[in-house]
Image (tube, rainbow, N blue to C red; front, side):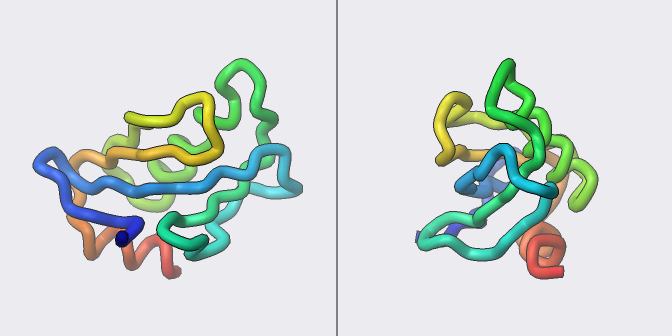
Length: 92
């Protein structure tokens, strides 16, 4: 399964989040997901906010975690963009 797929409202990105990292960054493909490291801890929703902020900064659009808010495996919906834009931003 591809980690980045078209959706009727934008693009779905399946991610694996590693909170508490030394810096926030996209690490690349991790099986059928994209590995994201965030410097924020997994407490109080801070790591989730860091993931959303990272996508908003890299891609634009409006990112929202739609599945897995308390799991390392999350599904993010990014509205207002197409798949090619997301793939290019994640590869860059």
